[in-house]
Image (cartoon, rainbow, N blue to C red):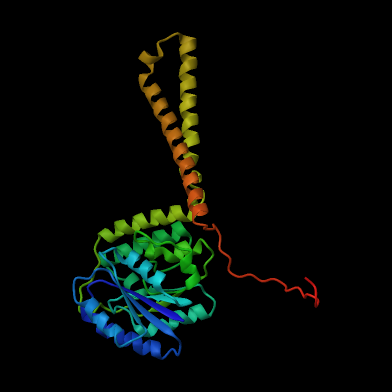
Length: 323
């Protein structure tokens, strides 16, 4: 079964056209499918249009969130509701060509776990509109070690089991392939048509660059230190404690040898040593608390820090009457 997940917000003017084009493509695939629209608290009549379509199309399901949570949360809600073995996420603004969906599915059939759309026109955009994509993709390649041209595309196809291992929050939907790569997902990119958004203005704004940076920092931490936070901050605590202790020792030795008043002569040095010592101790304690929290998280929810792609075992023949 194939599940199509589409988050929307105030897309009333293109919903019917999107539905018609999408249905025309899906009917040609000759496979069972469902379409899940997630309305992120739109203020237009888009939900009403979809509610009417539900009455005539059994393939269609519409979720309406209580308030505007953002695209990542809308996608997470759609993924949770999806029943298909393959899940495809799309944008709801008709910027891409529905005819590219079979290209994504073909990569899944070839054995990949994620097929991610590559919006070549979007990535090659010039001027201010091209700064954020270029910066985010350049930085993410180096931070995450995943060779992709377009980390920001929503157009992707996933094996459903991969999505079960990735928890979405914030704006991390852009980096699902990066997070899935941590669990060994096989990723392929597919060039998709990127057209001008019909009947709507571009939604780019410079603030997205800052948001992308925060997402990259979060992804970096999740990738390297999720199961061992002590290695993230705790490793800096020990050197700081050592430096502070060495400074205290040097000042103490100098005081004993010279007989001078340590407070009068080295007030600033004592203050610096104390700051180093306490800062190191705090970092070490934060890392230790993080270790406890991570273990409580994995153990309380029965989560594992690994995933199994497949299991093969030789079947033993049992003789008749043997137990």
